[in-house]
Amino acid sequence: MAKMWAGVTDGATAKIADDFNSSIHFDSRMYRQDITGSMAHAAMLASKGIISQADADQLIAGLEGILNDIESGKLPIDMECEDIHMFVEQVLTQRLGDVGKKLHTARSRNDQVALDVRMYLRQEIDDITDLIKKLLAAIVSKAEQYKAAIMPGYTHLQRAQPITFGHHLMAYAMMLLRDLDRLADCRKRMNISPIGCCALAGTTYDTDRNFEAEKLGFDGICLNSLDGVSDRDFCVELLSAISVLMMHLSRFSEEIILWSSWEFKFVELSDAYTTGSSIMPQKKNPDMAELVRGKTGRVYGDLMALLTALKGLPLAYNKDMQEDKEAVFDACDTVKMCLQVFCGMVETLTANTANMKLAAQKGFINATDLADYLVKKGLPFRSAYKISGQLVALCIQNGTVLEELPLETYQGFSELFDNDLYEAIDLYKCVEKRISQGGTSVASVEAQIKYVRENLQ
Ligand code: ARG
Image 1: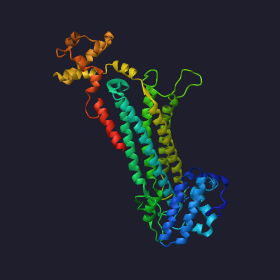
Image 2: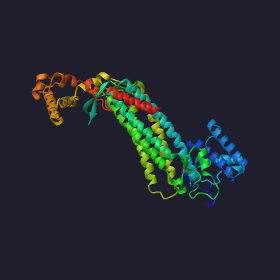
Image 3: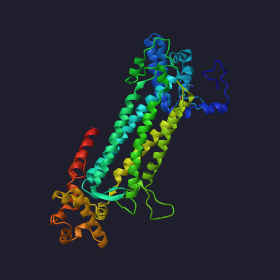
Image 4: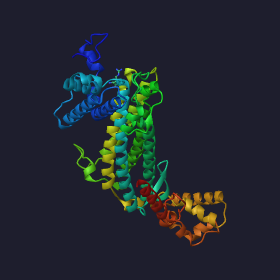
């Protein structure tokens, strides 16, 4: 095919070179951004008298026609074209003749592609934000449902202190709130317009970059044209925000996988979000959670791929930068899919509160409360800690639990023990007493729920 850029060369590239060079099979998804960007460009050119208003009107109508025809399926995107930018310009010129050739005045594909990617990803951030909010709503409503359901809290995956399932779930809500914040922050720097930087050096035409930026909903313009066409920080920032988000989903997945094992049996996933085995009839596998965990590695890979592609690039544009799109599109597609599946999985899971309670009753997770009991009666914490540990050791020797030891045994360790110790180590009481801000008491979890709900508005 004749190349639009044929000039000093005849443009007669080898077929394999064309295939290698072309990006249309992954950048065609930006057709809408490309076309609306071009419409704003045509309007700017006319507003500055660089082309006539009549030409701009024709260009804009032509571009609108192309957009409609792509959207209705009337105009299939020609995968023989080098990229989406070339495709749109080529169709425009076919349809309008010489007027079509005026569109690329005071512009380069370098600032054009940077513009398109920013516009495309800005929308992706908005979509991902909506999905996170939906997931947050699902988590918060589960937390509300289980705000009093006692379970063991863990450190080192060893039973540590009693908490509620609601409290545990709200920990993930806090992570997701930070993810929203990171995305919003990333969007600020993304929403700066590179159009008008042209190939690298700016242009001799008297353009109005702010006119285009404003028309396209940007908050400002890139202030150095070399930087404007070579900056892909916004892609790296988005990939890193998505990587952190995936890391959160992956940790949550890992817990769901553990919790739904026979060893824990803390949660039951809905049949709609589990799979069976082709050979073992009893199996109910948490594939969705496992895949989210697995896809996290893939998203990290996207981040590393782009960071590595960029690290040695001299200014300004280099073709290596075409590699930005597959990485960032893949990460966005992946995280959107994961968020949707995750939301359904959380909405439909049920907690086995009896099993959680049972697990909480083993493992001496009220030993800290026993020590605190003595502290409140005047013993220094370290001494109280020691006595509490000795009592746990005694229980282990005799195959019993702190709740079952008779008062005389307690008093053999310290005279400060009295009958009220049993209330102090009651699991519900242990939870109820943790009223410190952010703690596990029902009141504290309710406050956390309220905070997140308010932030979602
Ligand atoms: N398809 C290219 C990309 O995605 C567009 C920019 C091409 N610019 C150039 N000077 N060859 O990066």
